[in-house]
Amino acid sequence: MSIQYIFEILGTIVFAISGASAADEKSGHDWFGVTFVGFITAIGGGSLRDMLLGSYPLVWINDVNFIYAIIIGIVLMRIMNASIDKYRREIALFDTMGIALFTVLGTAKTLDLGFHPVIAAIMGMFTAVMGGVLRDTLINATPVIFRKEIYATACLVGAVLFLILDSFDVNRTFNFVLSGMLIITVRQLAIYYHWSVPKFGKS
Image 1 (cartoon, rainbow, N blue to C red):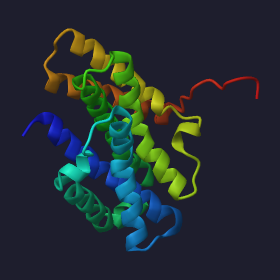
Image 2 (cartoon, rainbow, N blue to C red):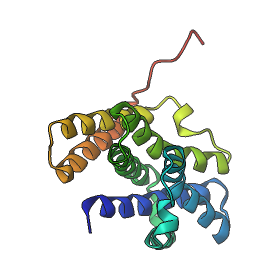
Image 3 (tube, rainbow, N blue to C red):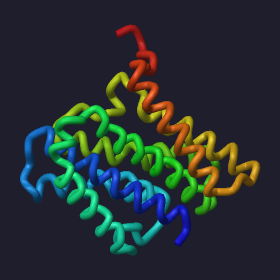
C-alpha cells in the first residue's frame, strides 16, 4: 500500500467529516442529507479533476474502499458531534487537512499522467477546493473561495513547493509531508492572523 493511497484515503475521510459537519451545522439535515453532502465533499474535487484529465474509471468507482472511507468519516462526525458543536473553530482543521492532502495528491496524479507541471499545480488546487465549493453550494453558503480568507492560495503555494521538490527528485513521501504541512501552516496562519488576498478592483 503506497503512501499516496494512504493519503487519498485519509483525505477522503477528513473531507467527509468536513462536509457532514457543515451540513449538520447549517440546517440540521437528516442522515441522508448529511451523508450526501459528506459524500459530494469527499469525492467532488477528485472526480471533476479526473473527468477533465480523461482519467477513467473514477477513483471511487474503481475502489470501494473510498466509499467505506466516506462512511467512516460520517460516522466519526456523528460520534464526535458534541465536541464538534463545542469546537467549531478547531474542527476547521479537518477541512485544512483535507485540502492539504488533496492538493498534493491531485498535483502528483496529474504529473503521473504526463501533464505539464503548470497544469499539475492548477489541478492540485482544483482537486482541493472543488469539494468545498460543491459542499457550500449544496448547503446554500458562500463558497469558501469567494470569501476574503486565504484558501485556494494556500493550496497553490503547496502545489508549487511539491513541483519544485519533485524536480529535484526528492523522495515522494517526504515531498507529500513537506508540501502538505506548508499548506496547513499557511492556512492556519491565515485564519489566526486574518490574512486575505487583496481585492480585485476598487470595490
